[in-house]
Structures are given as structure tokens and as C-alpha cells.
Image 1 (cartoon, rainbow, N blue to C red):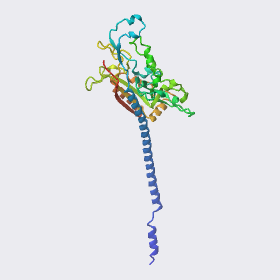
Image 2: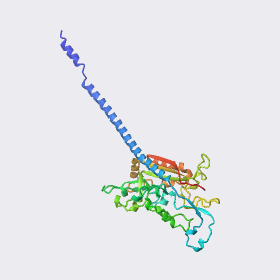
Image 3: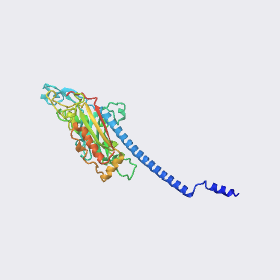
Length: 375
């Protein structure tokens, strides 16, 4: 019998054919392509999420800095005679007897539309600004190190500006990047001019304190030299965080009852249009003729709206670049009534959603420890 050829043929039939190998390779290639696509999508999603988390982490840090410093605001209010006859050069005034006691303060707390308080206009300054005094102990003088309660001026506002003023000198031929930024007005204690401003109105205690003490806030934000080329006055304002598109400041009184509703007569009545000036006589009554003059608001509601870098770059491209504010005056025009704050914030977020912008809202109500509310 011829058995060997039969066995050899049978052994040959146990292998893979060329067609089977090609089909297997095709299936494997498809699986590898699908796996690569899935991995690419996961990596892209992770990178975008990580970028948003990093951006919003910066916004969270800025929000914490703002609220922590704002909570230390002070006016150092004191009681004085209604006529400062001891400091008057008028001989007749030195013999006049005072008629009553009044509140006085050499310090100041002011908030309102950023475009009303800082030079730049609505499109460059969306939202609100706040300026105050606090014992932060910041000084550029080595002899003052350790005096951690020195009085300093502080201010916060959102400004659309270039990063040219803060770019390092050694980076050449770079293109300036325009972004919405949370800015901090932070002169050291030796450049605090609050008392000098107060002296100019000593003869008229009912007049609002001039706002010259923060007149340099926001200056030279759009250019003005890099790093060490700037003058000292241009360094008083610095960016705290990029891609902050709105800052909302709402002074409030304590609720009279639990869950007091938001209305024109509710907690926001001390600043119904978000504007508060501690040096001006506002809301006077027969029992309190000074109204809110020389008083810190008991509480301040702070809202910060941040977007991520990818959204900021998209908005910049849509606006055509070149320093054109992509949101124009859309945010500022929505902030009109403090008791409608929630709905106004919703209008802002809806506008951002329509523009396909990734955003996050930070909100907190700050108790001002230095407030001695007596109205």
C-alpha cells in the first residue's frame, strides 16, 4: 500500500491558506485602526479636560484671592463732631459749639460699573470693579517687613488687554495675546494715597472722597513696555488670571427674616444698581441722616465667570484678533438690577452657551468682618 503520500497530503492540509491569512490581517488592521481612533479620541478628550481643569484652577485661585482680601476690607470708622472746628482756621468756627456727632472715615469702599471707575470704556471693561482698603501689610520697603497689618489699597476688575506689559524682555518677536483678565490694583503701603485724598475734603465732610487714590488702576494695560521697561506707576495693576469674562459685585445688608426674597426692598436695597460709595450720603432717613455714608456693607455677593483657553482663542478668531473685544458690551448691558442677579447671570451663561463657549461660574457671599452696620 502507498500510505506515505497520503499522510504527507494530510499534513499539508492542516496549515492556513493565503486567503485565511489575508482575511486575518485585514481584520487585525481594522481592529488596530479602531483602537487607534478610540485612543486618539480619549487622549484628545483628556487633553481638553485637563486644559479646562488647569484654566479653571487658575480662576478658582484668583477667586479665593479676591474673596479673602475683600473680606478684610475696613473703613476704621470713628465718631466726631459735626464741625471739625479744632482744625479750622476760621476764628469764628473755633468758638462755635458742635451740634451733633457724625460718622467719619478717612478710608473708602467703592464698587460699581468698571467702566465708570476705570478708564477704558464698556467694551474693554465688562462687569464691575471694587476698590477698598485692607490691612494686608504689603510693602516694597525692607524696613517695613514684619509689619503685617500695614494698610494697603486693593481693587479688582475685569479688563480686555494685551499681555505686552508683562511679557519678559528676553522674548523677542512675539505676538501679543489679547485676553479678558481679572486685574488687581495692588499698590504697596508706601504708595497708598488714601489719606492725601481725604485731606482735600477736610473742609467739607459731606462731600464724597475723590477717587484719585485709585486713578492709576488699569493704566498701561494695553502696551507700555515689557517687564523692567515699565515705569513704577504701570506696575500698580497686575493680572491675576486670564480668561475671566465677568466680575459681579453686589453689596447687601443682612436679611431681616429667614429666606428674605430678592426684591427692590430686600437685602440689595443698599446698592440696587450694584453701585456703592461709602463716602457719599445715600439712603438717608430721619433717624440716620447720613444713610450708608462711612459704612461698609455687611455682606458682598461676588460672582466670577471664567472660560477656558480654547474658547478664548475661538472668540478671538471670531472677532478677527487685533485687540477687538469679542464680547463687546454684551455683558455690561445685562447687569442692571442687583435683586435680579441670578437671572442676569443666567442671561450671561446663555449667551456663552450660544457661542459654544466652555465656562464656569464661581459665586460666594462674603461677610465683611470690619463692617459696623448701624443704619
